Image 1 (tube, rainbow, N blue to C red):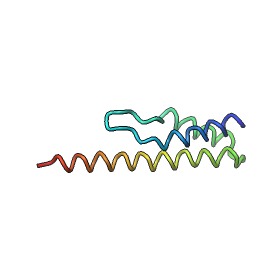
Image 2 (cartoon, one colour; image 1 turned 90 degrees about the vertical axis):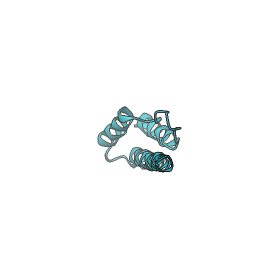
Image 3 (cartoon, rainbow, N blue to C red; image 1 turned 180 degrees about the vertical axis):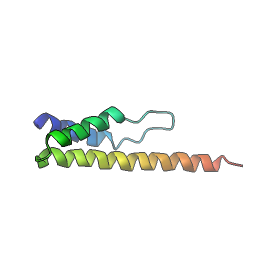
Image 4 (tube, rainbow, N blue to C red; image 1 turned 60 degrees about the vertical axis):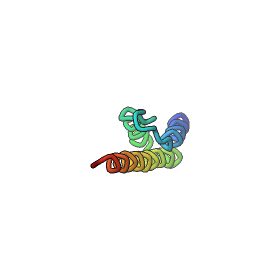
Length: 79
């Protein structure tokens, strides 16, 4: 469980990275699947669940900001 705790903590930090427009995000579907798997396999261990939830929350916030930035840029280029 210590490996999952550390891995989710690292993914939580990586999830804060906001990619530039043409760049892929640091965590994609496979990363999310691994976070959810860790949560399922360690559903009673708070020290795993806490960084896993943090990773998902950070990822959600980052992609929301990234999407908004793309939409704002596309609106400024519309006639």
